[in-house]
Image 1 (tube, rainbow, N blue to C red):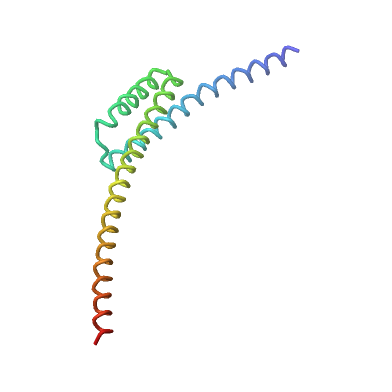
Image 2: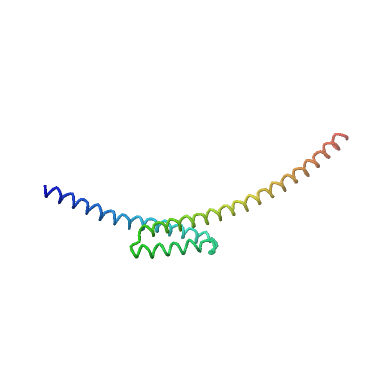
Length: 131
């Protein structure tokens, strides 16, 4: 009977130890993901004021992790990661809008050129048929 209680106690202790380590691993993972998003935002030259809040949250998450506050660190790291991703998506949307505007302008120019060529062709056809 005592050995069963001892084994159950050791199993509970081992589970608790593993759970504590898992929190650190999850915090490392969340902070790592936020760091990757930060690197991508910097590589894409996102305006620093757009990611200022994300930078502050990531720094706070790292400090909380160092203090052993893994759950709070994970939450802040995930918020930071989302803010980086939002800034990146916004920058990509802006770039796509600029590209779309450029393509629309080129299309309008092409349509005007086509009308001009069609007019010349129509005149040539009329003049050529009259001779």
